Length: 295
Image (cartoon, rainbow, N blue to C red; front, side):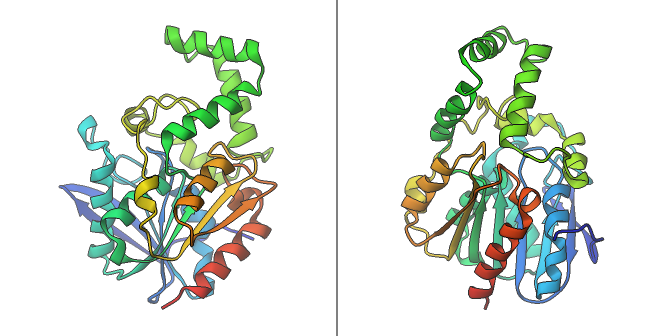
């Protein structure tokens, strides 16, 4: 259902003296502003999965966050902080004159979307939180459960390498690869846009904010929790997850219980990338939600 198409426009937006690359598909007042995961990933994988939605009278906008893709890549680690990224999103919205937007945040982009909604609720027509969490300490507990499914010997091996700092050991990397194919993308062949993003990962923001891999959170976001604030959200909300997601359905339910008016959809044959793993189920849910909240 999805397919790669070229952006109709590309912009350069200045944020604190740094250039950001911004991509736009289609036109009109119904703007779907996409915040991709990472941190440190180019937007290719999310942009190229959703750009074709311009055929549904949407303007789809995505950008390479600072430090990624075609945007500037400073090395000052003080930049890798969620509050600065919130202001980056607002700068893009204001500079392009997007008005009120439908904000779609995937994975880390969902944490950013939640934080943005706390600070700029009036900028949102709706909030779409995909394969994400509102409480990272809870997520860390869930990840321990997923790791545990590998068996006690494998978990002990992983913990030993983490304690020794030997995360590049083939044993450890094999366990992470297995977890990725179980809980990040369950397709035998990962789509080209996803491969492009992963091959150009900037580990600076990622290691600073999250940690060394998808299953170990030790960065500056490890204590981030906005469940209490989400109880005050009034904008229409869609929460999605995959049954096998690394950011588990239990994490999605925690957000749903906080924002009681939110809609929650679990895609039963997906992990972390339902727009690639299960597009025939994913896109109708997204388009139905957007159709009900135009204007």
